[in-house]
Amino acid sequence: MTDLSHPIFARLYPRLDAASARAGGDAHRAELLAGTSGRVLEVGAGHGANFAHYPPEVTEVVAVEPEPRLRAEAGRVAARAPVPVTVRPGVAEDLDLDDASFDVAVASLVLCSVRDPVRALAEVRRVLRPGGEFRYYEHVRGRTPGKVRFQRCADVVWPFLAAGCHVSRPTDEWIPGSGFTVRDERRFEFPASGANPASPHIIGVAIRD
Ligand SMILES: C[S@@+](CC[C@H](N)C(=O)[O-])C[C@H]1O[C@@H](n2cnc3c(N)ncnc32)[C@H](O)[C@@H]1O
Image 1 (cartoon, rainbow, N blue to C red):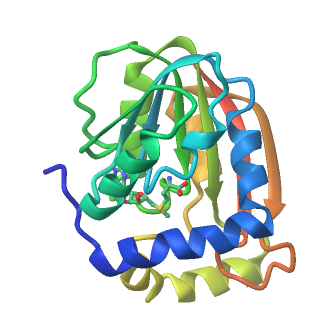
Image 2: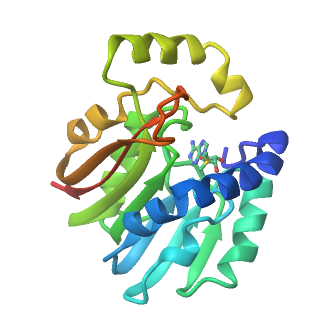
């Protein structure tokens, strides 16, 4: 199954993301994609918020998105992107793509939402060439007991409100446990006040072993 329909979330997300972009999210996307080159896979591309940030050294982006409304908007954004972008249906856990066929894979704010993030990471690893880069920008489990408790409580309702998004996932532990070597990683609160269960973020580059 390649369609995961969340019509209310799909209507709201581009507006929420626009507010987040003004508050610093756009700069995070630019940081995420700076220095990428060659053939790129983006999983869970949403409405295409990353597309404008791909540098000219990127020869092709294959963007996989399972939500039909977001995918349609991503298709419109792709037509204005600075590099060639193809948008297609699919889920990160089961990529209809060849082994070792990408130089770079990108996941932003996605591993919180996929049903099986460990399987998604295994699929990303499979389609990356050895030495290829996994670029990620994700919100993750906090580091203090109070924050983790807050996140676990939030995760009782959060996935229902935000199309399957979970705030307490230890994605920063799963990446190095999935056949990647973390090269650079920056951890930060966004928003900086930390007054949000999804505030702990990581942005980084991991190399496919
Ligand atoms: C919070 S949005 C982020 C969208 C985009 N990556 C961005 O940075 O704005 C989460 C995205 O993950 C997608 N998603 C959910 N489950 C997925 C899965 N199993 N495989 C791939 N994408 C998935 C959703 O449809 C949605 O587009």
